[in-house]
Length: 543
Image 1 (tube, helix red, strand yellow):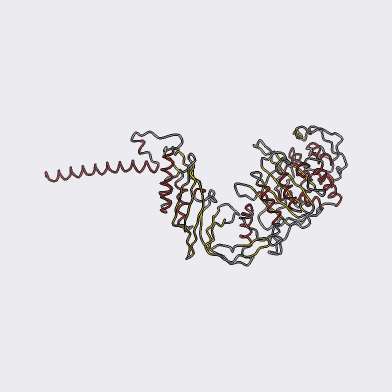
Image 2 (cartoon, helix red, strand yellow):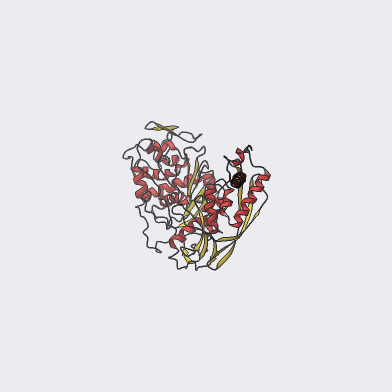
């Protein structure tokens, strides 16, 4: 009996010791993974920005686990372990990235730059991979731990939320996109063409005669967004794809949009509809030049002026009084600050000064209705019918029939009207030629698609619009931006108020010879201030 009790006691003591060791281990582990063990033991939770030692310790542990391919442990040093773990797992498994070596740079506060050197291997093909990225260490909100602030860009700078990395045989062959003069167009030389070239490859890769290779790509979850190639492990045979782009005009467009963030520009050839350039300077990579849907401001007055002329309301030299204010169905509209009223103004004068009230005073004249502007936009300018076939995804503009105050707001490019630079470059091309030629980036002969058609403008209307745009470029709101571009020029400025933004969007469209261009800068101010110089540079390059 005594022997049995002694064993039981020893067993009990052993059990307590194991329990105590387990409790101690729990505290150590939870201190690492964000649990509350150490706090329950009486240690105060830290607050404030992580110190230098904490930043160094956290990044070292994160990098060490990442280098080892231990995705779960690496993720535990971030503030979003589940999402981080998924991407870090894909890094090793789906992307087949191994031999990871990470070299941290000099920390700036809580931000740590670093360089990754690794190897990508797939079915016998292997290539080195090198890139730079950056992380920030923050204080965990619930734990007080120093943690890597999780962003997909930590793993690779090209990654955004929802993206992942994959190495596999490419779904479509690479393409060698060339411009109208045979120049090879690459995203390295023309950076903002990156998304455009990726879309062209997805759509035309199997029509351009190439064979697929093996690539490391960023796979996006966003709809209509093709993979972004990062590294080619095995070369396929690229297919040659001819585009309408002009290498010289594209280069000018790339440089011009660098002036302002969130800016986009498109240039077209009015005599053919061929797109000469498309460039965007945006952090999100969105092709706003072709797909944007925003109010175009007073550049819309080109279409409104055409509506007034085509319906016999007035003409270029006919009356379009410009008072200080104009009220339409209980909403009062004003002009830009400092604009002098002119009750005897002609349409040309109201147009070149971009007088809002002059247009709004005329929209209730017979025979105009709520749908007159819509009809003009659709039937004359080919807008808003969802039938453009540019070769890539694009938005055709929208000018909905509107009653109430929006009927007036639409006439000056506010209200419910939505456009992008592609649409407004096309509007200018139609205005100066009288012909609607649907813009396109790839010849319809390649895939047999049908380009949109519209009846265009009477030649007398086109002649008046072209002359009013010339006056705007030489004597009106576009004169400063268009200075020095010669005599065969025209322009229209626009400022679009967007809800919630203190500064208006800047719009500008213009022509020089057989080139028409339009640009938009979000929160860029008045049309001539930001968008104007972009368009002028592109037109200058167009010859």
